[in-house]
View (cartoon, rainbow, N blue to C red):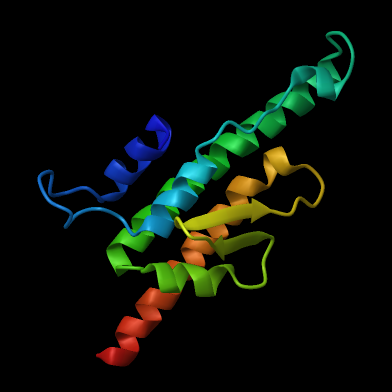
Length: 145
């Protein structure tokens, strides 16, 4: 797991108990946060030749968008922690979106279907799935009460 993802899960509230498995996040939530923690792969050369201020501003705008989406992922992971979202909630939340989660023999595999520019979209897709999973967990708890 990437250190960026590990820090985000710590900040969300997971890993409260250091010596046992009690505080660990569900495997799929940890995998999604780890997937979102990867670098977006923005390359300034893809935004135009030379140092044209317009293209430089476009690159910086996309870079800021990716950073803001990472913050959304961390907030959504916190919501999942507070609502006790499970892997089943995440699988249900991911159904029908651009983020495809398939079970494998060793765990899960995540695939993202890009629309325009994957570097500026995949984190938003992860955040949307985590927010939806938190909503499903909260509504499940309200029905049980």
